[in-house]
Image (cartoon, rainbow, N blue to C red; front, side):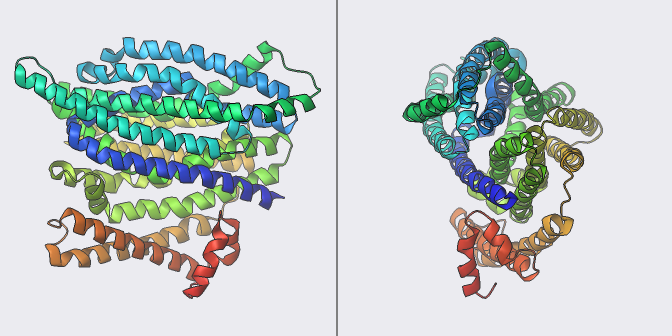
Length: 554
């Protein structure tokens, strides 16, 4: 039974993970032309504003999907469909009020939060906070019903519209600012700010599109909802009880996710303060440094982490339902399998990015001016892929099993330590944006350790260290060496790694990644870490078995 439950959650996680990866790929693909339009400076303004926009979403509604899916999955498991529907309606009212308040405050405090340049961008983000609330509730509703397809489609649609509108609006507004500046050089117009604001318009357009889609899907499911409610003859929770349930679950989720996501804001404020007030850099130079870090290196690491985030979102309803029924062993089996699958992806992703940091950066952000700097940042930042992937999952395990405030405490400890470390690094070393990278790695590692300890105590998890961590790491090191060697050899006839052109780099990188992936799989299979039984337990893993047997790997 545990095996069936864990396979089911992996299937749903696979759907959400696939969508998450597609979303991140679209995001990376459009970031490259967008960066060409607005530059590193524009990226700096955009990302500084975006961090505070995400923080506002945390407070208003971002924790809603996970929180709602947790409570509603418990009600569905107990057959309390009428109470679940009432919870859904109350949640919509809750996010409507909180979204309005946060959106207004975001616009009113924009200059204080991100300075003069980023304020224009942050004001564009403001109305989107209100739109995101109902979208989060609808996604949480369908996640509680154990179907990730509507959420996945809405995420992809959101990102496609976001990409198209962002590029178009950034291009039009940048050109408008350039023409305005040409007509009056003393106007003080900054094209980078205009372009960044245009990109923010794309975010709002994407959220609106996703919201309309989810409303349509809910409308199509209205008859099924009615039938469920007709079967429920039990008592319905009163409004006060429902609101208490929402607040009781949302608040811990809120604090946990808020602490995760407010960290970049704190680091950004500290970084800007040191760069401008202590080292004497201007806002434009500081924004450019921050843009290389947040708009390039950090963006690239989000693809592999997306899989862990998807697994975590898909896992919460299942673990919560198992726990409320007293099925502790099944909850344990789900968590163990999800962690193992996550590490099989996260570890090679991290080491692959370290080995091919410059080639990958050149494909996505070919601007030569900051290429080497972005690649260096990425090579160190890639370590966070491993730590964040597991801490994201263990965070959800703790939340799903009722330990809602444990992740909050862990995140607070990590935040306090990393903040002190960042201040020390900026005070006693000449490092600029590399200080942000080092601090993020330390923060992610602390969370990784604390959440792991908490999970082992809560669920009694007995993870196989060799199978989950050591062997994938060994295989990934061999993979990284092989991939780098292949890339190095392929680029020699074209002037070497430093001189190679874009398309040669693209082809060489794809070949290197392909050979690296085969090397990784070969080492894991030949070492017995991945067996036919393990493959059958993975989403669609059975399809790989005939192929691997054909090439004599199994």
